[in-house]
Length: 566
Image (cartoon, rainbow, N blue to C red; front, side, top):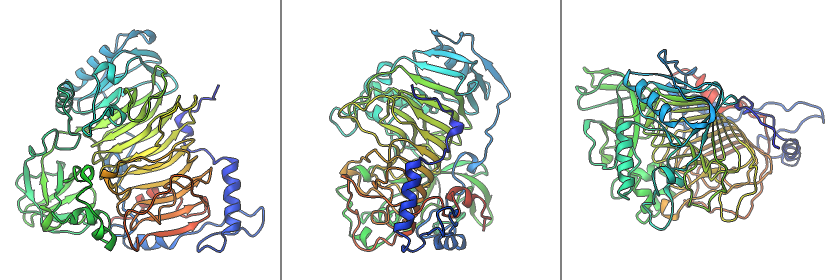
């Protein structure tokens, strides 16, 4: 039997094989710029600061290869998470026999009606025959710890809601990339989503709901540059400090917005965008952000994060309304275990999914384990959320972590994906940590992946960071051709230890435009070899290649958080 590990063990040492491989790589590739050769067999590796870091600290908000992600996550990266003082208990015993789902959902709804609170689960096992829905702000579902409180889920989302077909036709199941048996989703969004599923319609998953023409303009924005914290607007009368608004950028007929997301290079200008119908369905680009200050006299609005992209006249830049987001709610201190069933063939998942955040902003999961799930932790049109000390374990998952449909500024830290406990059935797929659908400025930090890969799943995600991660790279990335490029600009891999030395989207200087690969041990190609989406010079950087654990700073996200705001 596999030994159990708690999420606190989410940053273990690399395997002996990985360390030996790294040592060999250092010796063989010592001539590579920035590589380190120990002076003796027992000498500690000398830390190296790559030139890229020095460049970045000079221009942290506008660097051409490295994105500024120092404010990713819940409340711009702060924790501990809030403790809501009003406490609710449920009257169902944790005996593993009585269905506790109705009582848990009643308590969560009552906490919401009272303006917030914490629903506390005692140690033990709670059987749940339905999904758990957090629909109100300022509500926490808290167990006694992931090793002490278990929710045993007996039914899939197909059982509970029904088949959720794909907008792309065929027999694909959208439970392969949506929904959770613990589902954090605001009530209005939840009502429209379930009604659309019942009517066998596709419910759009973004920040403006099923109909993207229902948003209301709050003001238009004058041109501004990426990295600016403030913008000038036409009118501040509808804007208040603390408001959550949506920055909306529309593309033009020449697709200059998509070109900008890809770095504005010659390759992006030469790329054929019109036939990438899945990709173009993701625009307008929608970025939710909270207002930090309003100056009516100067018509200036300051955000809690810097602009992710330029603002240009041709993109009809606006601040708009959006689907009311779920905010300041979380789940913590429990294990969600699904009844063990064989993993389904690729894209036919029945929906034994873990925890999903949808239209959520400033929400969190902490010390949460999911076991025997089709898909582990999901971010679907979710932003500024933190997943901390989370773990996916059991029989194996399609997406242990997925991030899609315009999810931005999220932080996944101290995470773990365990090796599967049963062999993978034929026809299944393993993607690892997924990002797609123009999702941007997300961070995966301090992780240990015993299986999976870095799944840039087309849909041109951009400006995302993976840092300080050990990975047994045995998964495969996915993505339909109509979803367009694997990478947009400013993707960064920083201090990555690949224990089986397999390439596969680890070393990205030959694939991702305006990207950075820093501190990676030597990797070798395998049978999934990708050609660059863009032609010509990608203007990407590769530093300290052939090394592990020598790059300084070790963790790009944590180092960015220490930089003073300019």
